[in-house]
Amino acid sequence: MIVYDLVCARQHRFEGWFGSAEDFTRQRDDALIRCPLCDDASIQRRPSANVQVGRTAEAPAPAEPKSEGNAADAAGVPMTGGDAKVLALLRKLVAETDNVGRAFAEEARKIHYDEAPKRGIRGQATSEEADALREEGIDFMSVPAILTRDLS
Image (cartoon, rainbow, N blue to C red; front, side, top):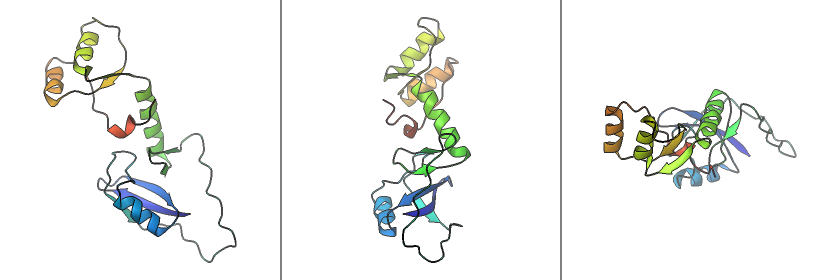
């Protein structure tokens, strides 16, 4: 396994594990590698401080991720540190919401005006619907698609 330090166009840094340099290049060219924070597919390798001198008869097994503080993105790219904790927390929060799909604006209004029970919801809204919700003083936030993938 080869471990590369990677960075997206927005300068989010993360690690990727690959079978070979060609495997990395193929996955990057096919847009299979995506930033775990912003879902950007414009990924570049960065110099790594992880340098191996010489070869052993058997390559060491990759370290097992710790259950706390480590996560993997939707493509299985391991991440560590604070970014992984933030991503894991955001995914947990998203998983605890009801997906109302394209009825987001309507459902947000019902909750805001106490016509429906208060609860966390997620879904899609057009830019016009989002503008109207803001004008009505209804608080919401946009969530990157990467946080909502594979939640079921």
